Length: 315
Image 1: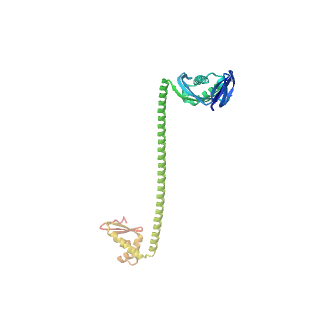
Image 2: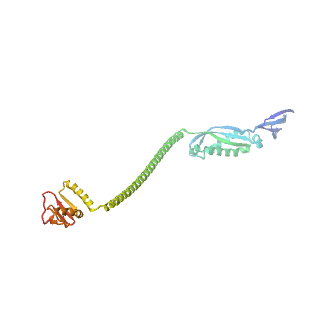
Image 3: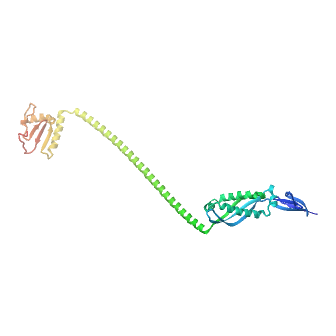
């Protein structure tokens, strides 16, 4: 019997066998063993990553697709003996079960779902692998698909589809931009028309108010003027008015007209002068004393200048 010391590291556990029979797990540190009675097997508790080689899988729509992925796992400390007692090569066992599980998951999906739902595939693989490897004391912590490569003809079809989709999106985006631009222009024209109409309305209102105020001022000016004229006219006597009529006669005499019509008030004002000139001192008008070129009709006197005459029937 030869004693010897076995050093167990912090991240390791030592499965001890006495005469071939499992006798427990030794903890980290110095462990005294006796040969040939004792034998041991080390178990690494650190998380391990395994690269699952690329393999061809068939999707639900019979499309071949190549996938490779990574599996992260670790041996659970309280079940470390299972990784030694229940499986010969737990790493090889995990690789094999991961391969078959991947084929089962991909076979339930079509190629479009495989390409677009990578997270779903990762989670499905992790759950299925963890259920199987739990009997070996192994915990699958994560599964990550590294690369998915469809067949060449599928890639060409996908490229054509993506190109058509990009063209469609570009056309939709351009049409949407054109529509938005037309809406913006129409809205701007609408606002401009509203502002122009409002400005024109305000201008017409101000113009009407100005015309109203101007008319009121003109009417007020006319009223004042008429009032002044009335005040002045009240102070004018008959002689002053007769002189004004004489000035009017002078202006008429300078014109080229041959006929003149005067209101009867004018003749009444001139009657004293006419009677004095005709020698009729009673102040009454006698149509027979008027020259033949002068005649009366109603309240007016008609006078003709020059050699023109008129018939008695016309008087």
